[in-house]
Length: 498
Figure (cartoon, rainbow, N blue to C red):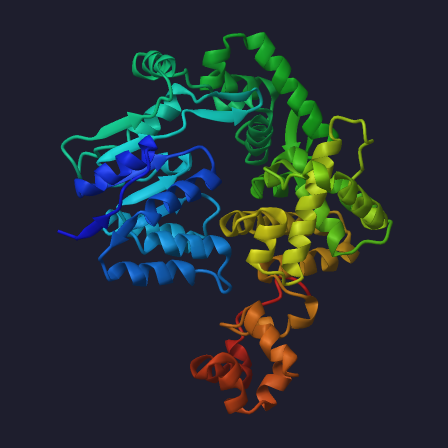
């Protein structure tokens, strides 16, 4: 059995329960409602635990080195892991989440403090689940979480292939809160399941997809198809459903994604491509409007960053804080000439969202100008995992814009968008493009080479192998020399940027 020295715990119930779990040599998940709370709770437990397990040091170092430049969050996670404690949320890098999940399954990591996302899709050997927060901030302020969410979290305890029983413990601060928890979650009924087709973006996408794949073509066929869905079963008002579908058809036709001819609907070439890209038709329509504006004005990379940041797919956006409001407005004014989205008036309902999209675009702009994950964490409160998710979506949206610019015959815009996409993917300035074609060369190594006057493939070919070895390490130096000597090995492309 692993030996652990446990210091005197705090009076806080969560910490006491965590230490009790360690004494039993069991594992537990602690659910909290924010990323910050997950990190703080894990750190508080770790400060009071001394773990005598040499494997933990290696794990901690692996998690710390998951990013090329470790952030404060990486340091914090590494400290916790050295004690067999971890925090887990969407702000972690994918590699860090994988390490935590794998080592928890192996029994090396004993406690994970996590946000509710860990309650879905993972089968972990947790004997005990501690639910610290049963309230969450939403549109109506702080409110009790749904019964279904509680059941998902509680259901992580005592998984059949790991334990014969499990414990799910909810924390109540007062007697009245205890009664509320019992009434709401122990005796309460789960909420009904609702069809996602009731959400307009989903309906738009599926309707266009059905027409593009020629599964349906007439209104009669469309109505008959949707009458068999769970949405129709729940709605139980066929005439109202038909009205909603007709309105969606009118929008898709207005946006030039479908055409009606002799009461038959067919997707346009643009509509077909939008369907294949699996993007909300409303987002695609917004892009077509932006591209038309862009074709008749001066644009740069930032034009397209702001365009994609003002889409439903990029939500949640980076929020503008109250103290930043005037500064962001000033920056909007300085970029006004290159913006291709229509700026709402300051008293319009969409104005705050527009400013958030602008700040999100600024964050992406800093990334492609080679700012570090630590800088983005400190200045935009965007954690590495959240950053990577945003970058993946941004690259996909820019690819969509590339495809649409081709179909709309805006070839002059294709180059700008392709450049933005390449820079988003690699987080680098344009001057590093040539070096980034080399395998095992990312923006950090490319910048090292560039700073030493090695600026393109020709310079790499002429450079002394010893010089390259000092900058990149012997193995990578040999690899890049081989690549420039045999051009067919240069498999990385500029993603359409020529």
